[in-house]
Length: 255
Image 1 (tube, rainbow, N blue to C red):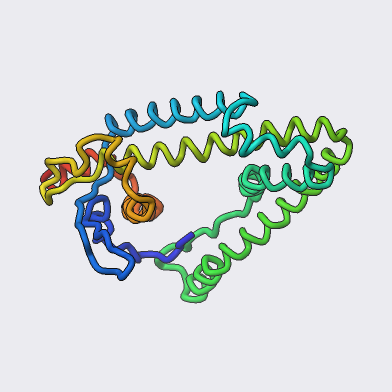
Image 2: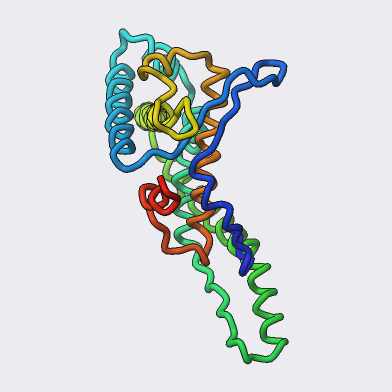
C-alpha cells in the first residue's frame, strides 16, 4: 500500500492503452501491436466465455474417462493422509489470508489539522510510514490463528473425508485458474489492434489468437496485465478517486 501523500503521477491516466512489442529469443522486435483495456460490453463477453470454459473443465474433471481427470485427479486416490492435509492447507491459504486481512483491524492514523504544531505532523507521518508494517504483522498473527484452527479441523477428519475435500478444492482451484486464463485471453483478443487508432483488431478470430505460440501469448498477457496494473494503481491513489470507468477515460482523452 502506497501511503505517500501528494505523490500522484498523472501520466498513469494514460496507462490504459499503449504499444506492445513482440520480441524473439534474441530480444529483437518482430512485431508491434496496440493494446487497450476493453470496455463493459467486451468485458461481459470475456466473462461469459471464461465461465463456459470453466464449466467445461469442471465437467471433464468429474469424468474418470477424460484426460483432465487422469492428469489432475486420478493420482489423489493414492495420496496419503499427511499429504492430503498438506495439500488442503496449501489450497486454502489464499482464502485464509483474505480472511486474516479482513480480521486485521488497525486504526488508520488521523491527519492533524493544517495549523497543528510541527511535532504533530511529524508524529502523523511516522505513523503513516509504520502503518504497512504494523498491518502486515497483525495479518500474519491472524493468519497463524486461522491455520492452527484449520489444522485442528483436518486432524479430526478421516482419510476418505480428506481425500473428498482435497478433490473438491483441487477442482475448484483448476476451474478458477481456467476461468482467469480464459478471461484474460479473451480480453487480449478483443483489446489488441494492428493500428495506432485502435480501429482494426490484430487477430481475425479468437482461434487465430489461441493458436499462436506460448511465447507470444505470454508477452501479450504481460502487456495487458501492465495496462491493468496501471489502472489499478491509479484507482488506489487517494487523490485520484472517484475515477471514471474505462469508457469515460476514452471519452476524456478524445477517443
